[in-house]
Length: 174
Length: 174
Image (spheres, each protein chain N blue to C red):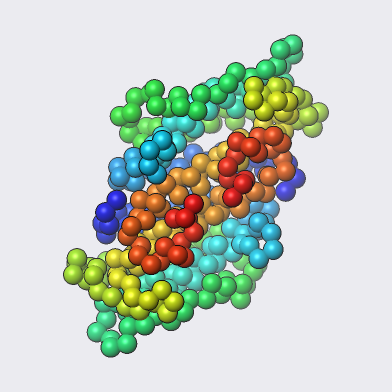
């Protein structure tokens, strides 16, 4: 698929709704269990997505289109969510994510992105030079990756319950 | 996680809602593209889930708890969805899946499943002897696996758009 801003936004704006239908009012075992040591639960993943809305995607998009001379991003803290209150309800976390995403997409639209702007560049501290188009694409893929991860983490909670079906359930072998 | 019927049903009953928030009113590129030859699009996956509701999970659950002497399942056709009309709207497919799942969960509840019934067995044509508990668990994991697959198929449509971010986006390397 070629990049289209509208195709990207239609994913970005539905992610909070997908997560809400996935996780709201679900038993805490499904929400809080992970895949083992140093892995993330669905709860952790929502925390990570919130932190990304606060400090990563839109912040970096604005750096790219800015007139600044130094267009280098700050590093992103992949573990910031563990420093937050771990006792919030998942529905509150999802509501927070939904609000942040909504206002960030309003900001994105307010940048009046043209094809010229999509080609503007900045420097990622580890990945080097990237364009606005690549950043928006990565934002979309990042959402989809974490939806897949939530599904996988939850599926693995039932790993020992499926018996010989495991051979047919590829998600348990990832 | 230990198996609990209620924990299983809470996933099974929300899958149609997850798919609806994921795929309804989405551009056809996202819905109809796949991962390459002999792979499935989100559209194909919904067709597969519909066929499973019609011929697989609940049908097999009823065989297990029946008084039949021959409790061997029919083989499941993994490619049945390709024999169906390929021009239905995705929203119609999802509505169909939602209806089928709802009535199948009503049937499941009407079986009045006890822990004794969960241990009842039947024979899967390839996997051998399985229990009702394993079948219900596999039904749950099967849903979650296909949600993860839909996310992955969609993410891969943007593979060539993310530039050097690909190294950080594990979903593109699966």
